[in-house]
Image: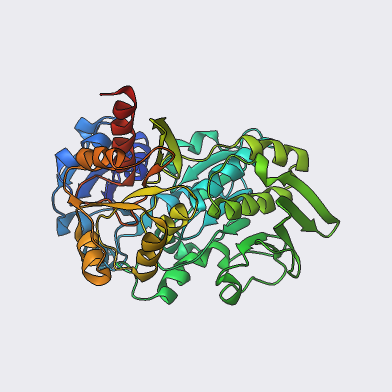
Length: 459
């Protein structure tokens, strides 16, 4: 009998990727070691989802070099930098390093070529979910996974011959598959702006990872991107790739989607087609117009009927934690935009409302520029409630904007409600990471919804 392969999962994480990878290798009969700098109590939500956890070796609160020297394969969490000393140790001992997405691509490329990859600084989650919804009108078995908190291994059994696979891909995930020289057949690039400078040395490095989305596309593949921002000056499509762009104006060259007199339109080689009156679309916020247009381009590229696109766009309600309407009491509406983990995303949320806004913001620092965020707060926000964190303290120091800082999240939410007049909104759109007070942005959003529901009930 052959020796049992030793797999090291570096970074169990809280979003399901590490769990999915661990369960996959456990089912394959491998010996699995899970190592994470977080401690057991922090990771318990993930640990309890691991099959046969009693047969898995856990190294928590630290890493041990010996694990990386003696493994047969290391699976790194996307959050782990590629130049980690532990990964370098593995490579120096001839141990291959891969990621859950990398292993997944190796497994599914032989089953299907119909892979749709979506990346972007913001908008990728909503766009991914909407693309899946649109594609399911024509291809009912379309699968959604990736950075959208659905482990790739959780959907592996659903992927058969020619299944359409819609994948949200972060820059970290794309960077991890660079050595595979593979890009999805359909690539959608929603936006590109400053972010993750706590991880990347420059915006050029950040874009280099994003560009894996299309870098190895082949003739007749499809690339969709936003023409209103900086992307036209950065993207260099490969020869023979079909390019579709999206933006607000009808004045552009080539094929793509746009708005005209409040109607979503699509221009192709066959001509121009009106798709749906934007007043029928349920998604809140001007930034979601771009997400709609991106999804329309992707759907058109695969022949989804225009009438089906219109019907689905009219009923699609968006994603949890992304400008999600939670409820209303005494004329005050509550919106959960906890996924806004950078200033640009929070600015987009602020600009989505014309009524008085009480903004709950702040959190952990990501080293991003704050001046424009501060300007929009001063112009559009009636009252600011701040959550404690390193980013909050730098925000106040650099901008001079005051505001009470809360270390108790529930007290912050209740204070925001008490200070908001009828016909106003309480908007949780932090503009910063959640670490410190919360496990992640989803934990933060979930707690917000729990508190709001208690407020609505009068508790």
